[in-house]
Amino acid sequence: MTILRRALGRTDLTITPIGLGTWQFSQHAFASAGNWAVLSQEDINDIVQAALDGGVNWFDTAEIYGFGRSERALAQGLQHAQVTPGEVVIATKWWPIPRFAGSIRRSIDKRLRNLSPYPVDLHQVHWPFALSSIDAIMDAMADLVEAGKIRAVGVSNYNAEQMRRAHERLAKRGIPLASNQVKYNLLDRRIEENGVLEAAKELGVTLIAYSPLEMGLLTGKFHQNPALLAQRPRRRRKKLQARLEVTRPLIERMEELAEKYQASVSQVGLNWLIHAHGDLVVAIPGATKPSHAADAAATMRFTLLPAEIEELHTLARSLKDYKPISN
Image (cartoon, rainbow, N blue to C red; front, side, top):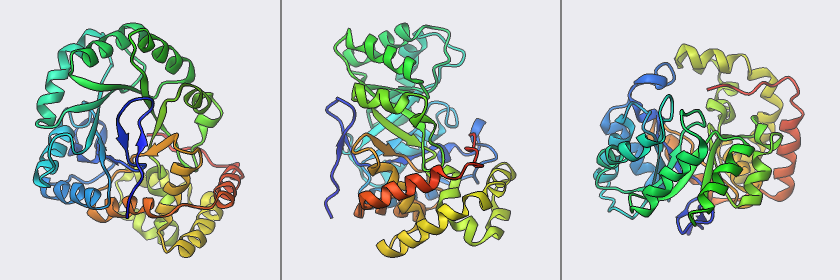
């Protein structure tokens, strides 16, 4: 099966509609604690291999994911799979809180060491909360592009105004803003209302959807077997338990579509995400098992009909009592 790749914004990088998010590779350090069990390097190797086997060609990590642990684990996983540098696209992120733009230039060598021998293809600003202006931050990122340290610049969690400002500043250096990584899925539709989706379309900026399955709620497995929640860390269990009944009508329709396409409920949710807006949105589901990565990758083998995409859109919108899950 040939998987069509998409341009990452207006850059020369091309990526598959599904990538692999690697927050789960943080080994319980910092903000990952309480969300997942600790993965061994052997587990991570198997997950990375499953993603590659499914056709995934890019991986997203971050400086703050275990303070470099995720970056190093990802690099080891790719080496174990005998992936050569340049064969896949690597995205990471600079943590801006509470730092000045100068730390972008100072910290890039550590990113490169952690990911060695793989390059940083896309370097992203993790949040818009820094001690320097967006202009100064984009200038620092542009310096890295011009120095050959990175290939493309992205942002994460930027609102529409911030994204436009970043785009404008980079344009003065002849560099496109490649992407904005935001929380987006069938149940969390805030970017459709706050101008981010509209701005991305206008600027030609790819939206990278994180938490594309709403922390597992859109897999349907907890609706089918609520007892599975007992196996989840308490922090995540409470968030999911409170939302099972209000989302059941959507999950039931997704189950019907899954049967039609001989797919999983997860694949239906991801398929909606990567096709509802043409090539604009790509997704980075995470995985704690190889089967999770394989299932996500298999999303790319089919395409929901336009009428089905619209039906899911309408049904999800009708869940008036639903409140998106915070990270």
